Length: 73
Image (tube, rainbow, N blue to C red; front, top):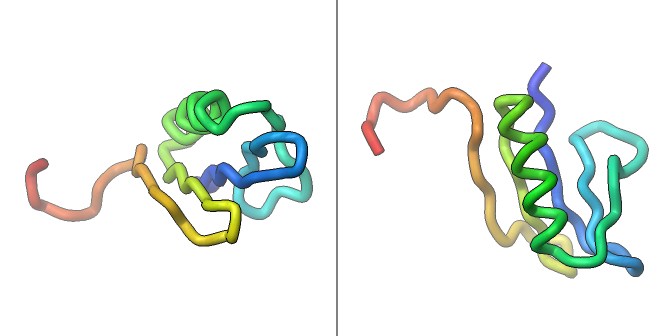
């Protein structure tokens, strides 16, 4: 099952959490560190990395799975 990986702000840093998980896999002090770890997890899972702003909105996303579109690029 492909679980999207979310990067969410916490009071102690930034959490890397898989969709549907009860707890974060890791909380890191900087967003850049959390993105690097989350990107590795998403690539391993073939899923999507979703980065959230402090207000909960999605700031960016990056797909690491098979792209269903037939458009190159």
